[in-house]
Length: 341
Ligand code: 89V
Image 1 (cartoon, rainbow, N blue to C red):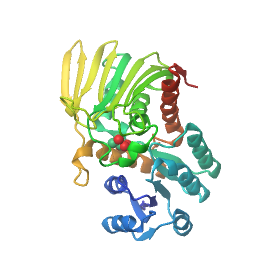
Image 2 (cartoon, helix red, strand yellow):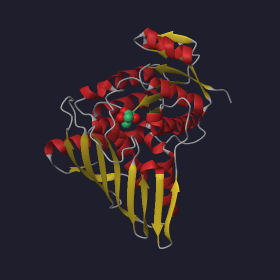
Image 3 (cartoon, helix red, strand yellow):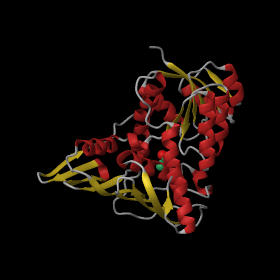
Image 4 (cartoon, rainbow, N blue to C red):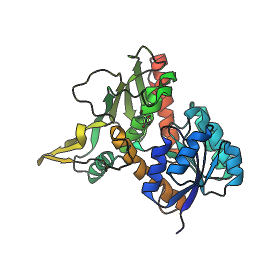
């Protein structure tokens, strides 16, 4: 089968890793790239042998015959870019977070549905091998029925050094990181019925919240606590950007600990193994866990576009995560429990 040809919009921090992910996953070929700054686009074009460079997305989509468009731009441009691709009848893969508001995310999905093109979201966190393994253990039923869980991504990592624009976001940690951790909660435990959220800001030089504590009551009755922090403080054990998970269930428990240790405890005792991510030469070692999960995510999205397997993180699916993200801000602002539709 021939490679899927795509056009990329954006040449910022994540673009290099996203393009590397597509190359690693195989079966796709980037034929054009567009960025406001031509220099940045040209530099990536040279690195990834991309034949054509544009500075105007409209011009690129009018000229290029592609199978999909990969949007790797800042969140506030996702809406216009997705709608532009839909107008050109092109399937879209969009970077997370999908949109700056729930209404915008709904409008993006509507635009794609009206145009009859799929909208897929590059939501990679759930593709971390250790998180996939947690899901597999749950599916075996070995620990029984889960009744409570904790999902933590608590780090002192200076995240603003590589992504300075994050400092300017009015809504920071839940949109940036919660989009991932709340998606993992859904991936492992299904949909939430209600949520309650408390936000804090530890940094004095940022606009949004950098600490968040979220309580989800799931439809299956589970209680799930999601804790996040980018307080840039000193933690004894800090392995950015690993997610720690603790699940209590009717016949046992499961713990995903730092350094990818997975401990499964039942009446048989505790079985311990490591599930580290693959190491790719192109990945930034500080972001290994994230960058390598891009490969699994993109392989799944490409399979979805080819009709070989269902894509997991479709626009429809991700809309449920977006509802949680903005439900959290509503809860934090009102100090109320929010019921989810
Ligand atoms: O992967 C991401 O989406 C980043 C990070 C989680 C590192 O903050 O923005």
